[in-house]
Length: 172
Image (cartoon, rainbow, N blue to C red; front, side, top):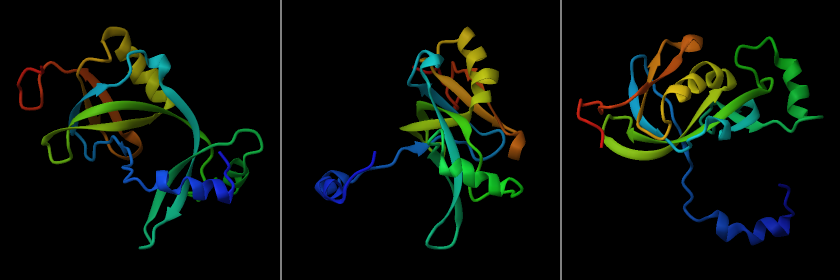
């Protein structure tokens, strides 16, 4: 949405209200897992966005990837991505379709029980290869264990029906 300077200034109080960003759900190392509850019951209702990954540089000089929605026809990022196809970490990537799955993660990064709202972002192949087959046999609104296997481009996030928490206690 494009705003005029006056509109942006009028929204300033709304914008500065201790907003907390939504954290992305991920598991750092192979074999790590977490118990989650998806906040959708029908996988066909998941939001799918075409995004470019652009390389941004922080004030400290660290380069980080940031997802930006593709504008579709005549997208300037699509045109720029053509100039960076040979790069390992391109300034602008070609458009990729991602699915965005809201969930409640039951554990924090230290393994403590601390439910938090997260968004699990995966490529469209994750839907076809993992989520849709799992949803055929299981209720998505029940507790699900997500386990990371592999490293780098071989990383997979497997889904299991969770009957016990990570300490072996029944899930209530």
